[in-house]
Length: 361
Picture 1 (cartoon, rainbow, N blue to C red):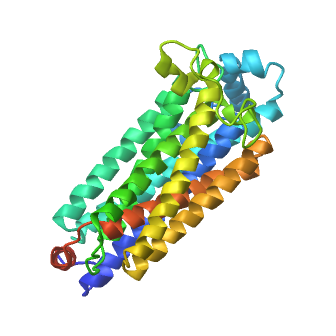
Picture 2 (cartoon, rainbow, N blue to C red; picture 1 turned 60 degrees about the vertical axis):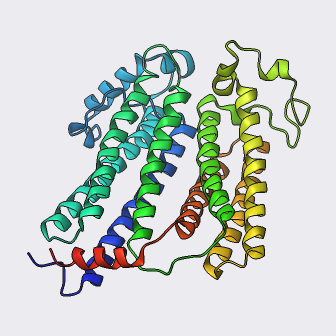
Picture 3 (cartoon, helix red, strand yellow; picture 1 turned 30 degrees about the vertical axis):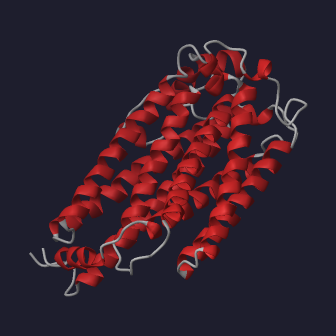
């Protein structure tokens, strides 16, 4: 079977642009999910209908039926009693848009994937990676409903544990795509000290950890409390009695509003310190220009993210600042992934062979 074109390089380019487009859609999905959370819209649709749920209510009777379903859950009874149908439609459209975008991403991934498989445009290793990403995407849909279900019976909001899991899985898929795109190109091997590779990986791990803590902050609405900086609860470091009053102690890391916001702040300071140190170290180690520039871009992005976080906190989480904060987090993650990939072992010959076989089919 022939490839996409006479040139393996053009076949590879088409696949890369497809994956870049999917990654961009996932980033957009994360932001729409953030807006859905900030507008308290995530529980407005109380059923999971993967196919028929694509269409919104089209008649007055259907709108009333959807509204009556929402009235049965604790969020309406305890927080939104007396809400009008017009107000319900506002939160409904956010959640519907979030779910529709998820479905669209599934189609945007699957149909080109099938096409590239049919045309023989994918090498063996690449096919294996893309099947794994596809499976993770299916799992993400199930995790999304698992998250929503946590707020339909006994809670007035979704579980912050499940919210964080949903976000992290989305960004794991995003990271896997970014990494795959980076590996679909021929480049020279970067010679760098082992410590640079270690700190690059540490920065990526800290970025994921910080995003996880940020999801817990969002899930607990912790950003609307303790809206001072640099002090929190009257001190830079609150008393242990306030940070660890729940038992067992580890529950404070996930359920205590003060502790969750405090660990999010402290991880931000650590992330910035490590990013700056790593950038300075690339200069000292006289690494390749791309590595050095990437490290400094990462440090700058972390700094911007920190400033946005402080402004979002002080102003009690306005939606525009909160979404900007979330968007820059995706930028930080992307740069951190690219930084690690640049510093990772790279077999140029194997990559060239894979790209050549991808165009042959």
